[in-house]
Length: 104
Image (cartoon, rainbow, N blue to C red; front, side, top):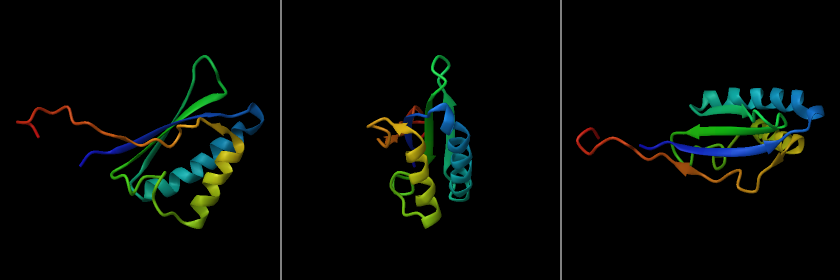
């Protein structure tokens, strides 16, 4: 089954960075427990610009769609208050297999 991914650009002011990183770390603990993955990358030329990659096994289990605990919802809202997310932040992308038909 193909994986599902979002790539969310977020601008975080320097004054919010430590809290943003701590909040995302806490959210990662919930994601790990669900078999989801979250990666964070910083733009090399613009240190206030980050990209959050979130991966799950299915569309319905993805962070952008899944039912979540109140604690997770609170963390997501906190993240959104600490940074400015791009309008397309929660577009879902589905993995495309590059295996040949014989390998699949």
